[in-house]
Length: 197
Image (cartoon, rainbow, N blue to C red; front, side):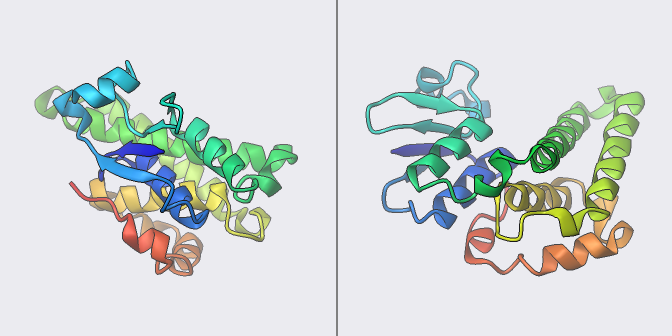
């Protein structure tokens, strides 16, 4: 299998953490491509030219990080979605982490518009992140006991906020969330996939 990724994408990072946590590193070749450069290999696999994109051993492309992560998890015996799949509350918390990723990335995309960025949308993104992180901070004890897809997405969100939105200073706003994050930040899969430009 081949996983096309970029080092800045939190979605691609989640997929890369899945690869490592599931022990699939020898089966999955990771290939860096910058989507803004419109690489032919990525466009041919994913018409949206987005990362991550997984090409399986038959040459079929899977895209969208959730699809890829669920596929990888299925290949390895359903370990990271196991507690989530049959629990609607946990599915909702997982969906919230995906929504937080969407807000954080959209906030960055609006920032990149420089003088054209929208104060209205900037505030919308920040407020949604405020509320989402507060909601999760109050429910940390409800997360799966074992390291899961929720943990992976939430770590990806928090590290992406540090990477792209350092001024947000989530660590000073959410002390319980910070303590939770500190307990996982040295995991090898987390260290190895830190976001970078």
